[in-house]
Image (tube, rainbow, N blue to C red; front, side, top):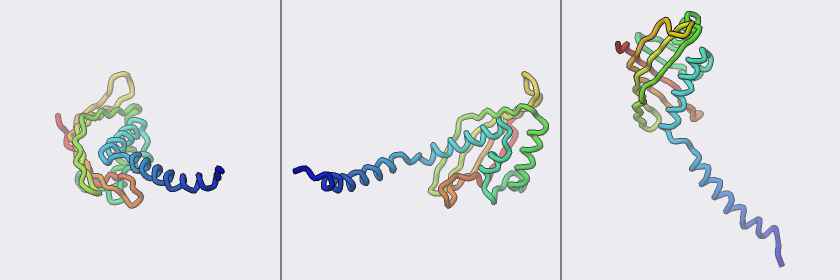
Length: 149
């Protein structure tokens, strides 16, 4: 005689094991997560979204010449006020992942303007430092950029 509670009780551990295995497979690799985070920061800049950009920065963020998180926020606000359109094109990302930290190097072309052609533009060599926070989110800890041209 078929007893549904026995079938389901045997299926529960198997389903639980499958769920764990599939959950483990669904975890995004660190390098891919970094690329997504950088893509989100790029989108925030192009959308002139200071809040979204600020969410990427760690509380203890440090940039060139001692630029802190609040200074980076003010700098972004000033750029967004000056230029109606902001463009950011990134070169290939060179990603190095080490346990809870990562370094990403790339070139970035930043443009600003209000018409069809940008009023201003500059290419930078950029090096960023990232860490995994307690919630499992990536945050930008440091950044350094130098004009290339």
